[in-house]
Length: 316
Image (cartoon, rainbow, N blue to C red):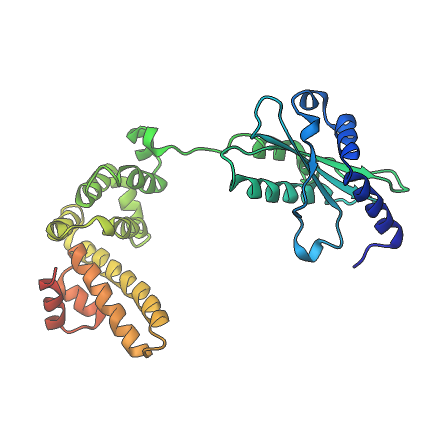
């Protein structure tokens, strides 16, 4: 796809005018909002030579970026992002947003605050201009999209959220409670607290093969110390019957195995699949020992000899 000769001529004329200082200053004088125009120093306006258009689009699009400093803060810039159009492009607002993001990304690596970016479309087509004037016009429900997407993002601040509010949320509450207290409780205490505060939810979790409880054990595994290994298993036995407790620990063991085998084989391709598998089993066994999983379950899950696992245990 290429631009026709007329379009190319329009682009060429527009760019040539924008290469002159007087052209830049007059354009900003006439087309920037009055409030913004009063804040800037027109004498500092200049054409940015760097392109903010991807290489494969550079010949298809006309992009002019003008930077200008504010009067009261020398290091703060305002940018005018100017695009020439000879036809109504439905997606121009979206493309301008992409350019703006690219410009902001470029700018943020050099300064602490982002600049203002004022997008402008110069249109000289034959037909009336019909393209949406902003990104919201591209949504099926413009007003709702603007209301939801232009305001502050939703902040789920777990640190300031009362525990009782979290506990009342059921399954999602387990995740939030664990994430809130992972820094101020050791792993056994956190597990005990969850099992105590979410009894009804844990009962419901049992119907789903304890998917949330297993995820909690996996999440806290990095905080387990050598001294806490048996304590963790004791807490499981305290809140669950023997059969369910062993089932949870066995499933946890299998999740370590599955994850370890996948990574081990991937990393061990050059060494040989079997060696990669064995190394992953050893890593999984160490992680399970740290969790306080019994030797019998680890042996069953990994396939490693009991003597090998006992030797690994002595190395902790």
